[in-house]
Every structure is written in structure tokens, then in C-alpha cells.
Length: 149
Image 1 (cartoon, rainbow, N blue to C red):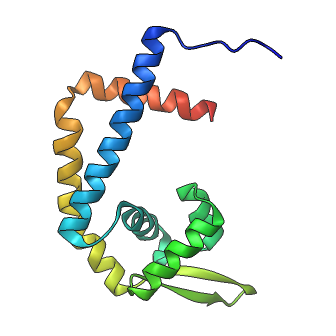
Image 2: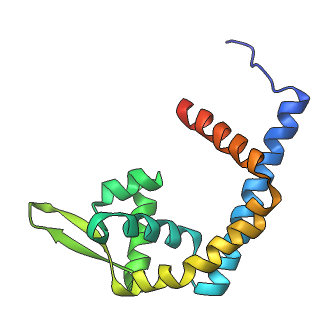
């Protein structure tokens, strides 16, 4: 077996800082979003993808791919959102076995109401700490890592 190529001290500090930042940022954004709107970050992510889709509907596999979630997580989460009236399942006329996940009027109103506060929280917690050059570097770094994935 090959010897692992361990992270050097700078890499390890950077990696751990990134993990702490990501965890704390997600937790704080989730806390603020839930307090202000009753939506979780997961709810918000689903609703964003549906609002971006033509007619506010996607096939479950499209939503799964876009969110990069496991099928069981998506299924359980959509069931909870459906019980709250945020989304509904509609049969696909072209494919008797298939269905669409459809944004409801309640779901559209929920994200419309939540979006301004959520965007402000993202700005307050993240972007206001960065200058424009750092935002460019961040985008470049994210694009490079995403290209490897």
C-alpha cells in the first residue's frame, strides 16, 4: 500500500478552518432562516431549484442530481415538504411510473417571503467580510475544485 501524502501544517490548518467555517456558516444560516421563515436550508435549496425550473416542476431524479442528495434523503424530505404544502407530486402523463415534484403556491410564497432575509444573512455573514478581489479568488478556487469533482 502506498504511503499517504499527509497534509503539511499550512494545508491542515487551511482545511480545518474551511471545515469549521462551512459548518458554522451553514448552522447559522439555517438557524436564521428557520427563525425568520420556518424554512430549513434544505427546504430553501429544494424551493430554489423548483423556482428556477420551467413551470416550477422537476422530475425527482433531476432534483436529486441538482441537490446531490441520496435518493432516500430526497424522498423523506419531499414527503415532509409535501405535508406542509410547499410541494406536491404530480403524475407524469408521458410516463405512468414517473412523477413531477411541483412547487405549490404556498411554496412559492414561502421562498418569496424568505429570500430577502436569507440573502441579507448571506451578505452579513459571508460577503461583507470579503473584498471584491477575495470574492473573485473564492469563485476561482471553487470552480477549480468543482472541476476536479
